[in-house]
Image (cartoon, rainbow, N blue to C red):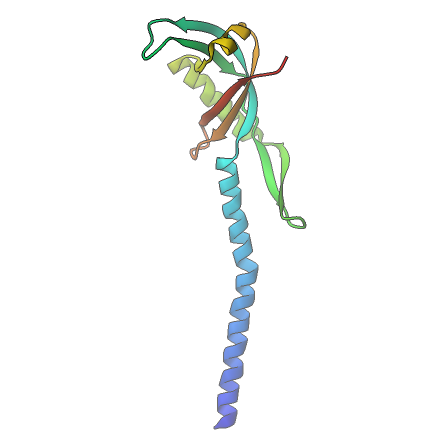
Length: 157
């Protein structure tokens, strides 16, 4: 009877050890994939834009506005991968297929809705001229074909 219990206990211990070792192998890979998804859609990326026109809206509510219209020059999407030794994210090469999808979507958006715009302070507005470059921070949307503009700032001359 005792050998039967010992045998079952040994078998149960072996099964538990096997399950735990599988968890230690599989779970980190699943978490890396989740972090990759989070990193792809929540990370602010940077590109440049060109000022195409300016507009001073005097009768805007609640107060006058200084509006700058701009066109994004492109959306470079870099691939990122996890360095397994240091557990840090490293930037890879440009993902040309994702980049061309976003550029095409941006051209389509410009044709339908016109140039992108941002409101600035009077001082910033007056310091910009048509043709100046802007630094644009953006984030990918989940559909992978559109972007969300986070911020627009003047590139230091």
